[in-house]
Image (cartoon, rainbow, N blue to C red):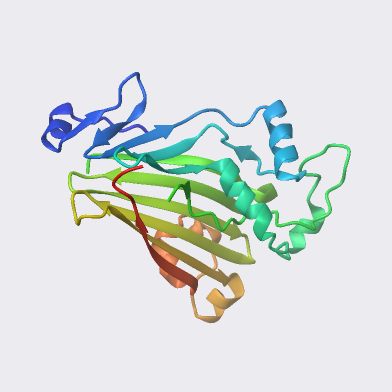
Length: 252
């Protein structure tokens, strides 16, 4: 999604567009850039598999996509990318979700091999960003998988920049049809010019429930109701929540 930004509004907020055709802006001590590219090529796909020590990757991995926030005075970078997110998935190594349809799935990676579902095919990740430490809004897709038409696994990151602050949402959304839903969100917020030590507030919240549990509570289980995690997130019980303050030094 591309958003037109009024230069006069930017100027009044103390901001400017990035030079050299890059997508994003500079505001106060921050440079915020969104980078978009194509899905992994066959060669890059093989290289990622080798590096991650896996033979399984999501159907669509946007390896060139990234969101980068750089704090000038400290040279601190907070960035979000698909490779680090998948590294988190590989490290967490959740057991595969049990679903009747899975037994009928065809191979998902090597054409010469029939897949044995002994890995987390949902690509659930604990990833909450990488880094050393209301006029522009863009969403970057890091990876996506339709789980062989049995649901969706989607990782996106979105930033909103306002005259007074920036707000970021990293969202992993999983729906295994008829079985479970999982929502892992990381929100980050920074207020410009507040306090002597620049501080980013980060909150991670993991929610999860089964379709069976929703039905027992009287909620509908029609898949059309659960196409967007936003409106129904409050129906998913919280299983983990962490709030942190990331202190950014004034100098390198």
